[in-house]
Image (cartoon, rainbow, N blue to C red; front, side):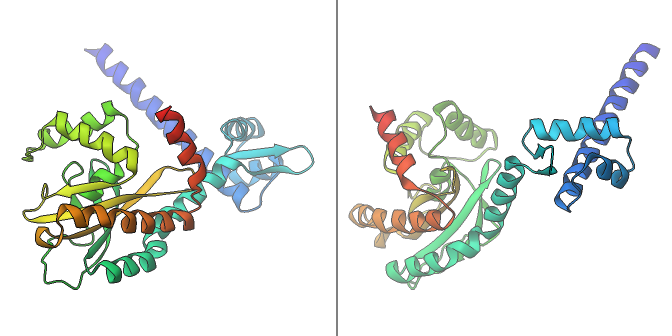
Length: 274
């Protein structure tokens, strides 16, 4: 019994030590960001000894969050800049997308959504209602399933097959009913991924269909998705196919504003096909 308590105590001590090290590392990063660039200045600012400060700063240099030059000292590194850029992009996606969403809604007359991946669900960040008298139950701030919504599927287009199966099955575990089998769903997702769009064929909401496409950032990764939704009476198969280009074009315009270059993505898809 004492041995168990001893082991628990050591584990707790390691966790506290790890948390303290993390906090100190973040303090170093924030100090450099504020303009403190020499080892002596860092140690004095953070009230740490030079060896501890050097160890923390060296680790951050190794991970590229800081860079070091003998004559200039420490500066923010490329990884810190990358993380900062991604944070800015995430915060600004609705703002960047808004004008494009409004144009798409005006052009199609249908309801337009913008959403991002939130764990195993799709989080809706924006919604522009269409001109038609169609009631779509979604609201900004809602979380919706991934496997049954067009927007949710579009967010998953770059996922591997094992990952797709995990996303599909986690909604089974959540008790959500869904008429499309896993095998059929995976087959559809492969076809959608080849063409960079996805459909919701009345899978999530009765008599509601939608066409969706992914939004990518400067790295080519999917960061969001947009969709056009309407009642099935306005969304027969022919119209859905016609809408693909409009939705995909709007998504690509938003992606371009986020720094996306379509050329590398096209080359990557071509090499996969080959």
